[in-house]
Length: 393
Image (cartoon, rainbow, N blue to C red; front, side, top):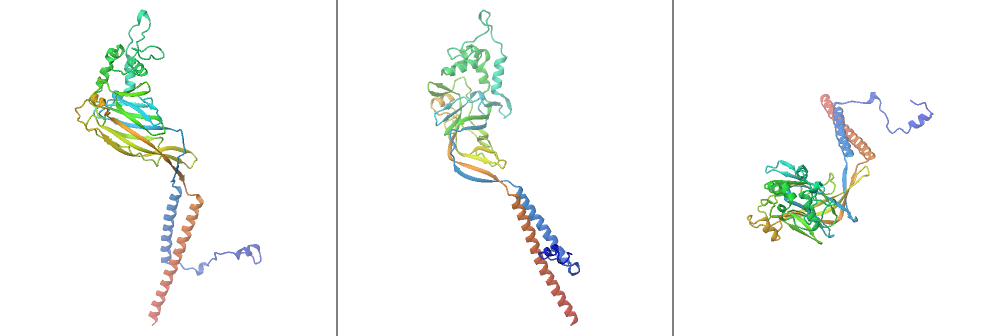
């Protein structure tokens, strides 16, 4: 107790929490039960508030996309169970007029057996096979220098492998129609290697970089050749003929992925009933931006997709006839860019908000519990007095 007239005594007058003496307090069974129940409720509600405080939410906002001159990565992971790797080409065309052909710089092709098991990686297998073959002796004791057969020779001036001659033909804009007449291809067994893959499948995995404008990705049978300012797609007679474009899309995305992202075509499987089947996927790309709590920003894209299948001619038609009739079988992904951008911002409740909620829960529950306890106590006292008065009577 503070001395009368002291500073402590003056502050004591402001005590809003007057204390009761133990001699005047009564503890009851009902009060103990109410206290335990109230404590459990408080623990559950405060725990729920703590989980909400720890949770990070994403708030979405839609704005006009003002970005210009962007590049975009298209991530591919597509398996073709009935199309061999040496048969497949990968091209991109866009509305800016740019066309990219044979885009395998960052895309690997893995050969698959009929049961889906991996045979080998196509590109490394060809390189290893070519490098393992000994070169024939050159003329006059000089090192061997193969002819490019009229194609544009590489920097070294020699085409020592079948692939060198093939690339020289592409640079010239010529079709590679008769590899059996080329010494390097005969030595390496190029046609036999290609025909040996008949009945196999292929899985393409990797990414391609494109302009962020309307365009399409084409996976076709054969190869594209630039002739002047135009590109031609051709299919050669020595290529395998028993194939179709049945496929499973293990992954297709535009840009880097993030937690809130969903890819509409992931897991899609289609079966072709004829060689002429052409699968078209029309995607609408919406730019996405994720702003994390640590200040970092991730820019990506989301998309919606619709699909269409063309080509229902009889399966007896040959691939040559299909190409000639301009009914090109393959898989096409058309992409269109939306002018809108979705911005996801990570948000989290502040510590002050959590403490305010916790205090409100504790105070509110104990206040309600005190009211309930007072009501129960008065009821018990009233019943007890009535019972005792009845006995006296």
